[in-house]
Image (cartoon, rainbow, N blue to C red; front, side, top):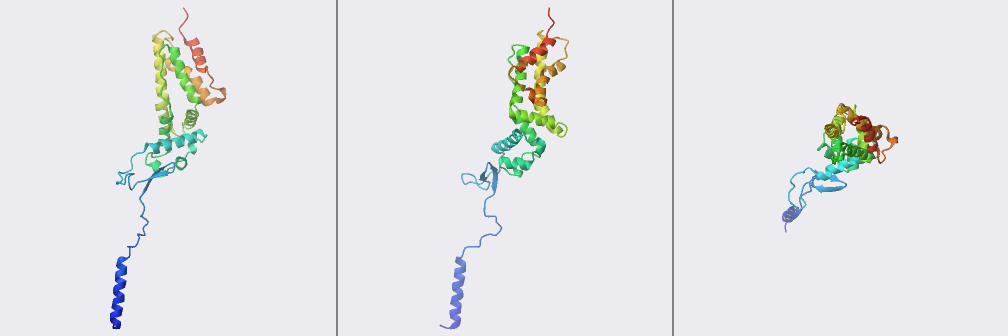
Length: 247
């Protein structure tokens, strides 16, 4: 065989081997599906569904939100002031990325407002048997909030941040303070109508007299204690001066 023919055969063999080689792997690093939000270390692929079908986007996850709000509550329970709770710190304790938080809340204040709404217990159910009984139930609800570590931590933080975080204070006032104030005022007005309470007493002032002592002990004087029977003592003490005149 001539030398040119041998060279041509070798070239043809090389071409055939080149065709059989796999295509080169992409070097842009985009070989893995995108990872979605991480809750407590458990990640799910956003590129596929659990059944192998195409992803349908990222729905608003209640589990993620609970994890974030729970993270803030845990920090408050540990005594961390609101002013020192950063988005980075919340993300770390909740096991999510900062972007996950910012997709749901525009900043710290909005997140704190949701935390307050979530942590607050429902309004107490009033027995309606008498003004005294209803007032005791209202004060008992406040006393238990003062004893509960989460509610107490939120109360202390909110009152401490009233001036520096007016938006947080406004939300707390609207979600927590105002509904309870209106409830107490309604009880006092019904008590006046039923003759259980002097008609010449300003109900707004009377509300402060009933609720004030419990708030002072829960927020300003934690050393004073929130013992059993305190609600009854406050109500009976105030009613002794503001009850109907003896006949």
